[in-house]
Amino acid sequence: MRVVEVAMSKGGEVSRSGAQVEVGTVASVSSVWPASGSLVGGTVVTLGGAGFMAGRTACKFGSAAVGVATVLSSSEAVCVAPAGSRGSVAVEVVSNYEGQVPSAPELSGDEKQFTYASEVLLVSVTPSVAYVEGGNVVSVLANGAQTGARSWCQLGSVVLASTVSA
Image (cartoon, rainbow, N blue to C red; front, side, top):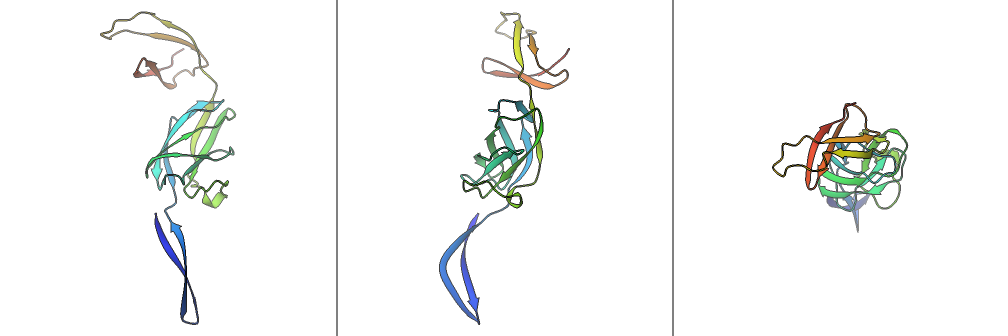
């Protein structure tokens, strides 16, 4: 982002008022992770892309109100998904957010998708005791998980990839 001084010209004379305008790039979204979350909202979503500016970037999930993003770098930002209805919505960003809902031309228009899904309810975990050295097969029974879905389990501070099976 850079600041440009505004000048006006009339009949060859240039008037410099000292007014300035910030000029930045249009933000774009290239990835959304995770790509799904709870209907009740609160899913922390990491966006990959370009043109993110600290304090000036906001996220929009479908028609839900805009929320200010936490910008980690010009290519990575974090947003919290609001509550939504089951199904997919477009995730867009605006890079010149000033507390007002942006108009369509100011949104990135990238339309990466975020899917609102039902809550997964944990029913049981077996075995209830495992070896510290690892190598344990842990079965998790849950209601609401989709067969074949990419998922993960967190055991203490360790996050493991998993697959949902019937």
